[in-house]
Length: 192
Image 1 (cartoon, rainbow, N blue to C red):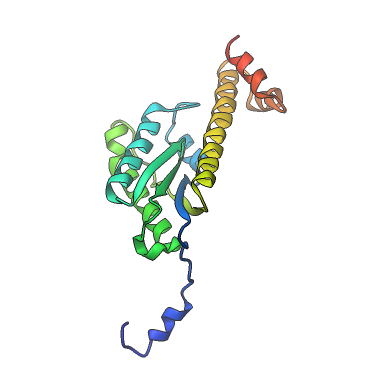
Image 2 (cartoon, helix red, strand yellow):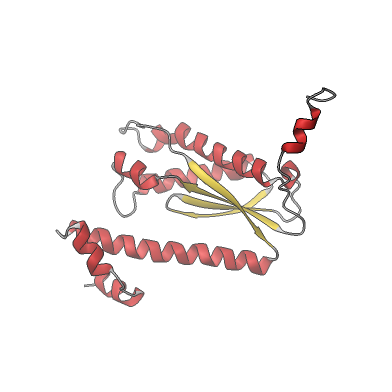
């Protein structure tokens, strides 16, 4: 489009540069992954092959994008931390998040047979993504602590939930039993 009468169209693009010195984190999250897991009959609460596939996708992202220096993930979610000085795609959030999410999804589909040789991929998963800006290392640490806490809370709930369902409780009975329970009560349930 350079030097054409349509050059003005570029002015309609959003300016979404993540300003320095902010750190950039791209969080990739499976869209409607509960349905995807159900269709592909993932074991509950944690399907080891599915988790290993997600880890493999994360490793591929780290290899493909050298400006990413750290990744943390659980379930159907991964957060990728870019080095503070990154100038990747001029730090444009929309470009970066679309690249990371599309690459992650492509690797997931490409590596499916490696982790699920006996299960046909019924449809390609999709992943949402967002850029989180962290003004300092302390904010980044707080963000990662939040994701780790979310992992713990969700995994504890899911482990209890599926333990009860597998012991014969209905889904609605299980939801009612776990409603308003605290961490200590869930831990006691697991060790009965």
